[in-house]
Amino acid sequence: MKRNRVITLNYIKLIVSSVLVTISSILLAFSLKHLTEFMEHAIFKSVFSFAPLAFIFFPTIGITAIYFLRKYIFQNRKSKGITEIYHTIDQRKEHLPLFRIPAHYLNGFLTVIFGGSTGIEVSTVVATATTGNTIYSRRISARRYKREIMCAGITAGVAVLFSSPLAGWLFAIEVIAKKAKKTVLLSCSVAALIAWGFILKFDNEPLLHYKVNGWHWQAVPYFILLSLLGGLLSVYFTVLVTKLKGLFAKISNNFIRVNLGAISVGVMILFYPALFGDSYHGLNESLNDLEHSQNISLLFLLGIVLLKPLASSLTLGAGGDGGVFAPSIVAGAFLGLLFSLLCNKFLGTDLIPLNFALVGMGATLSGSLYAPCMSLVLVCELLPNGYDLFFPIMTACIIARFFAQKLLPYNVYSYDFYLAKQRVN
Image (cartoon, rainbow, N blue to C red; front, side, top):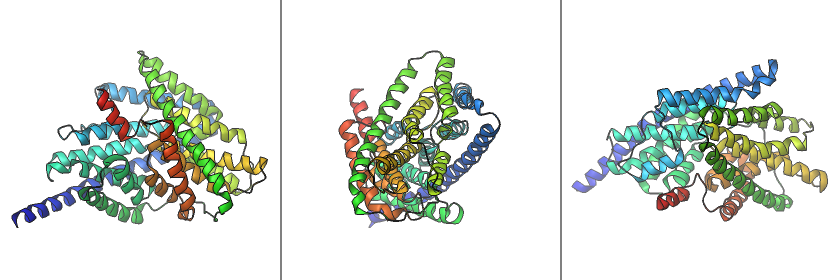
């Protein structure tokens, strides 16, 4: 009887802790999301209208500011992103220092608003994980619930970013927790439910405002081929990130390292403005052009597919803050558009570009994160009736994930990669 009482008390403490971290993480993610969206749009619009050549130097402004923040405010303490979360969860005595919250908040914000070609998703994940770790360290709950409380924060953060509580829940369990214990399910479910209520009340706008108009079984072979291409694109992105981060780490001169990467990104933005920041604006404009039957250059689409991963890798190598979420979504969408238009032009097909953009998103994101379930739900919830494409996107996510892993056994953002590094060390 006493044991049951202790177990019940521990569950109550876990729920209380999960509620606290969820509320904190929601406020953090919501403010970062909307501040970044507002400033990114304002800066892009003003620069594009009055001085397009300034695009060359704008990423330098953001990444230089980050460099000085790291050096003088955050004492040159570098973050290892998601791998640091894995290490903290596995080592109960290790903690994410509190400065990770303002560091990633500011660094993600500065990177994106000045054109650094990545997104705020990984910045949000690390900041919300730190929020969970901070509340855990106050010992409200039992010591063994560290993983649970950190995952609650991550669930809430991802849920708010994409207005999808289920995507946040799946990301925390599939990518971070790696253990579907009932306590993990409980804490993440509490976080998802609270986030769902918040989203319904304050932030229920999907990323894309287009509607799926059905799909045909004759398109399945083309979906499968696009899935393989999406897996290949995700491997290309992962290899670029790994190689360029290693290359930039060898540059001892900080001025050269920051400006070499940032100005390279700026030059790309000058010729391809859609590469600015997270590039969601560029994706929306391209989909809008197609919806209104305006022609899109195939070379433009090819350029975005190849250059978005490169620009993101250079941004991260130069010292920007971010990860693979937004670049994978955007590059995958443009891959789908390019693939469908090429097939329509040269093979006489009648493929629907929007459908292939969504399938390309799911395939590339799944291949980048090795997270097919989360990728499926996230992409389906990016627009009002995205679940009409459930089967094609599900197929793409599964195929791309295993194809990418076949080509590249260890993804730099995966738990398996973290374990492999631990064994080597």
